Length: 181
Image (cartoon, rainbow, N blue to C red; front, top):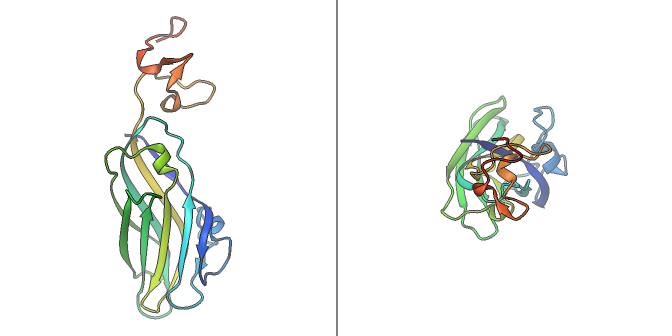
């Protein structure tokens, strides 16, 4: 099954965290840029990229939080993936035990009927808990999906999964274009 990775593209709410805008430091795949809570028990919410997978079937998702603890002892946080209608609303309590950046992950299946317009409203909320400090270098969501069947060729660099119709004919009904399978 194909996958697509979506990353933060906007700050919805930011409590006491360093290095704003935090969506920029969380989406750049670089451990040298990070955010951390500057006081106890803080929250941020970031919106995620649009997926642009019209007609696809959304199978499952996996959230990755690249984090490390600050100070002595373990750190803890709750990470929640949700969409605007809360069809997806999953929280995971993460025990951050590493003093070096580590990928903490959780995931599940999408509910039936979940669409690209639903996926375009996905956000992540992170709450630091237990009075601990957490450093976060990256957050992203990997989505496993089944593309639309039909005409199976990319056109002008547009992925075939994103082509639903050609001149009002559904791609599922197109076998050849100009004698090309």
